Length: 152
Image (cartoon, rainbow, N blue to C red; front, side, top):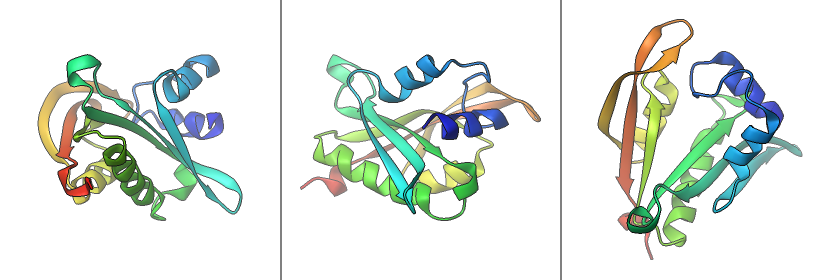
C-alpha cells in the first residue's frame, strides 16, 4: 500500500498529501478507525486499494465517502472502474444511502470521467482549492450519487 501511495502522491496532481507525508500518517488515513479497506491484486501483487467510511458522523453517517489509490502503472487497465463498482456495492450493502467525494481535483480528467460514468454528478466546486504542481491553483469538485438503485 505504501509503495502505491508514494507513487501516486509523487506526481502531486491528484491528492493533497505532501511528498513528506509520514508512513504513519498514510496508514492512519487509509486504515484508521471506523473504515473498511479493500485491495485489488493482479498476479499476486496489490495494484489498487480503496477505503470506505461514513462521510460525516451521526446525522450525516448515511452518506458514504471513499478514497482510491491505483498504481500509476495500472492506469487504463480497468482497475479503477472495478474498484469503483465494488465500492458502490459495498456501500449499499453496508446501508449507506448515497456516496459523496469531497475533493476530486478538476484536472484529474480520468477520475472525473470515471465517477460520472458510475452515476456521480458534480454538485459543487471549490474554486482554486488545489495546488497543482504544473497548472497552479485549480478547482476541486464535490461529486455525489445516491445508492438507491443498488439497494436490495
